Length: 415
Ligand SMILES: *Cc1c(COP(=O)(O)O)cnc(C)c1O
Image 1 (cartoon, rainbow, N blue to C red):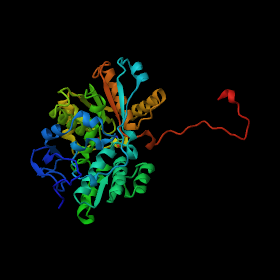
Image 2: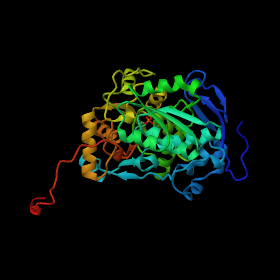
Image 3: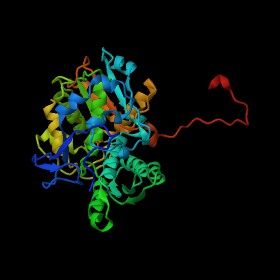
Image 4: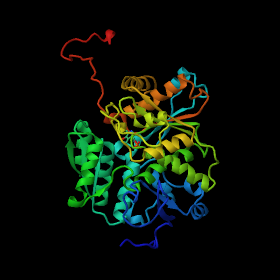
């Protein structure tokens, strides 16, 4: 049994219970939970009044960077269970040349560069929380399906926490991701299928292997970690949210998490009711949320033969589909698909013109922004935030062709 009281050195925590995201059914805090009885994600609920009375924007401002600064908004009860690999507050970088080129005259096209986090992606946020809570609740062995980044983050934080991990990746996951996961202490397997096939193995093996299923939204705490993106964005923008957020959407945890963050911030009076329009960006080769959005559906259908260079958003079926669609619709946002060719040319353009190497998923948000400007769904004067979710360095890039033979005379005038 986990302890319920805070030790003398622990800061106060405000979790009251968990709640089924579909039925509202309540679940007790401080116990191991997966999905709700209805098979839907559970959301953590807090005593926001007490939280708001305890923390202020000023106390926050005095803390060091990184998502653990939002400790009171998070479920971990004891400091001893916090796992850290040196997180930072990720920068919000303007793209001034491209903004000018696109006629976005306020120059407010900002990239939130999540590639600066430990393990090179924003999966660090979710997995740090999942691992900390696993430790707090006494779990010993975690497993998950991954397209690469989530597995790497889980392996790294779990190794810090002293927990065992098993990871399943689609066959065609780049070697660099698989090696990273293995080197950071996980047992990693290539599986001849996609992420949902890997997810099935995690579920099927649960009983026999005795691991805990850390799949996106199948445990309640990754979303709390991803929520810190919304808290951090609000704080960085001086509690004035942007007009539009473009988010590369796979399982959708980040989009749902930010939407939850904004609701919590409004509840404690730190922001008003103005919300960004949330835009779910997918690749044309795997766009179940876009299809459901366009069909006016509440849930998305499994996307057949999913393929895209943006592996992080190659998710043919998302268990939180209805939550993504709700946030998109409630915010008056939209869902948009971009073809791989546009994703790759967006990556080239941003790197060449701004010196910022995005990951393909991040590049998809820039391609989507351009398309939305062109069709009028976003106005040039609107303040826009694009999410770059991982460092561009973790992805295969085109080979460079120029070579020099240093043993021969070089015609420097021609270089
Ligand atoms: C996981 C991942 C995504 C998708 O994030 P979700 O919040 O699960 O939708 C996007 N980009 C990258 C690089 C990722 O690793």
